[in-house]
Amino acid sequence: MELRSYQQESIDSILSEWEQGHKRTLLVLPTGCGKTVVFTKLTEELVRQGKRVLILAHRSELLEQAADKLKKVTGLGASVEKAEQTSQGSWYRVTVGSVQTLQRDKRLEQFPKDYWDVIIVDEAHHILADGYQKVMNYFDCADVLGVTATADRSDRRNLGEYFDSLAYEYSIVDAIKSGYLSKITAVTIPLTLDLSSVSQQAGDFKASEVGTALDPYLEQIADEMVKQCSDRKTVVFLPLVKTSKKFRDILNKKGFKAAEVNGESEDRAEVLEDFDKGKYNVLCNSMLLTEGWDCPSVDCVVVLRPTKVRALYSQMVGRGTRLAEGKENLLILDFLWHTERHELCRPAHLITDSPEVAKKMVEDMTEQTNQQFELLEAEETASKDVVAEREEALAKQLSEMRKRKRRLVDPLQFEMSIQADDLADYVPAFGIEMSPPTDKQLKALEKFGIFTDDIGNFGKASKLLDRLKKRQTEGLTTPKQIRLLERYGFKNVGMWTFDSASSLINRIAANGWRVPRGIRPAEFKPE
Image (cartoon, rainbow, N blue to C red; front, side):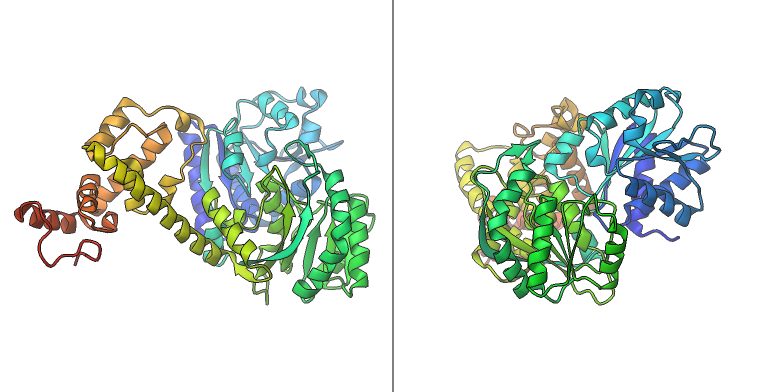
């Protein structure tokens, strides 16, 4: 099987992290981008090296998927460590294991602590749970790969407590642009659902109270669905089984062919198959289908289980991001949840990690209800607006800074000048990244012309140095050139070549450090 370029790159990066001594590393791939394919091909390479591998998950569906994909993609069989099944005495070098089973003392003690050379944790955003930690602490000699579809800033800070590094990340934006995932559109529905009285449990809204708060709005929501997605294949996520069943009945009265599945459904497999075949056009569930189920033809997702947890929100929406024949896009119906205290995940949070851009997108979509927004286009527009606002704020900051005549360039000025959003939005997450910058880093940055008082951590210093060295190699402007020319009013100097900037500076110097006649700095573009 031929891997996509990002899949091969991710495998190479994982192996490199382990070789560098980062024993616990993380892989982030969006739902639908073949994370199971990646770790099965990685497993194949590890087995070729003579290593013993454990694939660990918390749901039977995930274990079955992993074993099936391993067999299909690589031809390798796997033993099973779950309930009464055991890998003890098996000649297979790969085991798929249930964390619920392995965390039991009796089961753990059957294995030497170095039994597995590598442990791969599927849906790794769960790894900080006590059961996972018990297993991981027992097999602490093994190299570890965590695989997840989401690891935003908040998640990364948490996962950074366990993982040493981020081996590879492929964003949903890159996947959509490359044609590996469906385009996503969202429409904001002007129906305000009041959650102000709903309390929290384990960092998210309490499902039982959400269900009660949602009940009065179900008829109106169904009416909105008639307007927006009567011709689409839709999955609806609800907080409670009883709410899910009630909503199914309402939808059927409105003309939909709706079904409902839950953990107790004896005919669950049959219903899911019938939905896949088109017997039903709406599938209601109480958070059952967030992991381990795929139906590529789904082209509408309705999230009626509001959440603060981006990983959970992405899992729900991810049921509809896969490509399918005849599928033009995925539509998300975004209702206006009213909450006094807590920020909710919205479609914008799927596309950007920047809180500023997400906030701007939400504002734009809320102002223009009942209109479909293509999320990539909406993000691009919001990003430009945020950059403009930043530039305005920066202009004020620079006006104040000029009074202090600095010899060096402020890092924020440099980042804005070269349009480096990744530097401006950088937040450290792993190990050494969070530590203070070294004296060596600070001296190197000052040599390049960067004012270092505001460089708060090792990770930011490393990123800046890498960017500066790359710009030097590519023959682009230096920080000192940028500072000098922007002081005269020239724009976008960070995108000029070193030679263009040098030539202009020489002309200005020859003219007594005045801008030569005929040159308008705000409009000037180098040849």
